Amino acid sequence: MIGYARVSSAGQKLDVQIDALTRAGVASEHLYAEKVSGTKRAGREALEDMLSRGIRRGDTVAVTRLDRIARSSRDLHNIAHTLQEKGVGLKVLEQDIDTSTPAGRFFFTMLGAIAEFETEIRKDRQREGIEAAKKLKGTDAYVFKGRPATIDVAQIADLKAQGVTPTAIAKQLGIARSSVYRLLREEE
Image 1: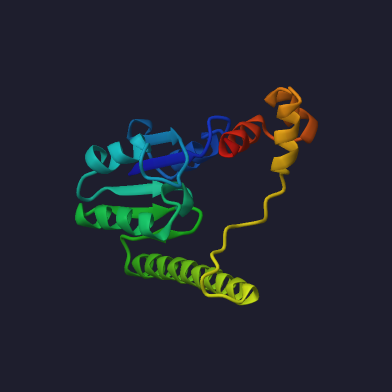
Image 2 (image 1 turned 30 degrees about the vertical axis):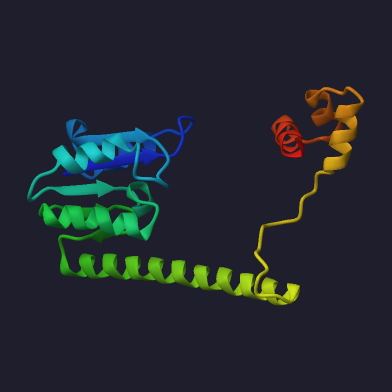
């Protein structure tokens, strides 16, 4: 059994996951752990090392929860496909998934389908919201650009003309200094 543990930031601890994986039968020399965001596959070196060199036919990769190994259904399916091609099972401890069994493969497939369905529904709702905003504006050419600006550009320009520094402007208006610099550049 090969274990994979991940937390999203350096301030978080891997102890709980490592303990659970060890109790499930993962030996310390077969444990891959990292502290890195799971939203992107790039930069997850322990995962890549495990998938490319750490597993072989007949192994089972164990994780505590699905979101530890993947944060999107696409990434999850890509990882599952890699494991399947190599003849490696996936065992998710807290969600009682084991792809080495027919029931586990079925449950895993259903979870992936549900996640994909939720993503599509979210996209549809977003698209409907944009269409509704276009209708409110009364034109198909309307492009939704987020919330209206809350920073008064003229006030920043006036303060700058009075000789107030960008740092002082930011402090006085309660905004980020980078916003002041950006808006001053846009005004030039």
